[in-house]
Length: 227
Image 1 (cartoon, rainbow, N blue to C red):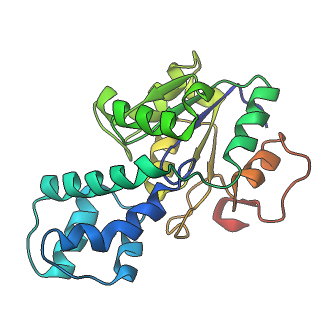
Image 2: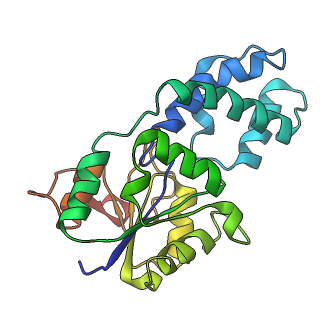
């Protein structure tokens, strides 16, 4: 596998924020006067904001303003992240391997840039990336290809010279549309529904092995559609 740079998603891939989002869901809706079981919020993982809001309103049989809902959710999550920024397993090993092989890397996220940079600093990862591209720096966020295209360009590379890693189907579609040569999906809380990535693995450690940056290929690494 030949590549010159790596473009990375943030939430759900490097940061364990999707699990935090699901855990805080009941707390968010209590602020609006609704009680919803914890299990419901796992259905929202990997969805974009508009689709998640639609499902919430359908579950409640009511209408919550999407902007107000997002602000409330972000506020509660921010309070939790002030105490601790949870990382996905193997994050530092992954960056250590990129360092050892001299591979540049950027972040391509649907978070706004300032928020993404704040998360990276809180996690101790900001100095480990070469560039951060947030949704506010492009005309359209994922699943449109723009953040991944810009993420490659910030490394001085064309997309076909890069590898992309993302946890969600939304992000995989974005990376493929951008023309990224190899797209690796590392699902977080829910399995892929679309299975469009060139490869799907269980962990960042397995991704390293697949890329030839680890010691031994993992048994869980699979090709497209798991074959």
